[in-house]
Image (cartoon, rainbow, N blue to C red; front, side):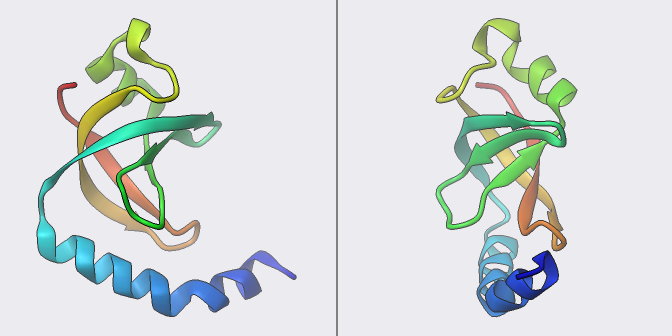
Length: 93
């Protein structure tokens, strides 16, 4: 199965979650799940994960707090439809 075919299977569900998040316009308490080359993967309590730029996350949480499981406040800034991620901006821990 190709990536585009896999995305088609989830597209309706992804759209539903995007609408739900867009309506809320709120700050979430998320936690670091892992580190990808694209950035820091964050769980904000939904089926789909968020991603934030590594350097921006480092500025906010500090180098001693950059580990899986660390909680910090974040907000959804945009949506990455190609990867089905919430694009995040971080606030204080």
